[in-house]
Image (cartoon, rainbow, N blue to C red):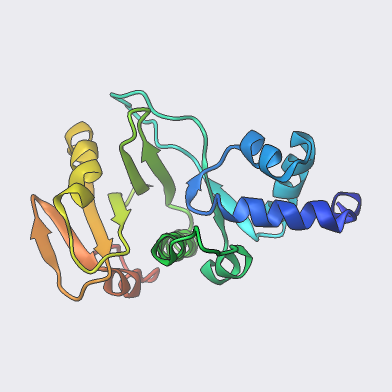
Length: 211
């Protein structure tokens, strides 16, 4: 491990490059190309982050898949603050894009912690078809089957619900939620839209899941 991080320049470039993968599909080859480091070195760096519990990857949900889905996992830093400190910004970076990734990461870390405290009774995935429909989180297990989409927006547009509707059509047993930055609970097309902070506050690991 020490030998891998001894080259501070390579490791620093890696951290900057991988920060763009936070909340996104993670392709090691693309990260290696971006920071001009061999793929096996990047694999070692990722292993270090995961061994230190500084990052994790979410697998794709494939159970009874009716559509072709992607194969790569999604990458997250363990903490939204770590992501914000590593993610560079400049004239080409939209603040709302960075804030959206940070919000998604915040929800991810709460879901992972909540599930761990409940004894890992469920698993957390994401879902993305090769056609491009994506739901940020699928929580599946003995207790729940949730499909959760996170939007950094105060108002809900019809297109914000499209991927959840697609998932619901394939998995009618699931309960879809859209988390957003607004203040009201709203039911739209059978999808419960909940203020993000309200959803997170109700993730109580000591009681049976009920949102």
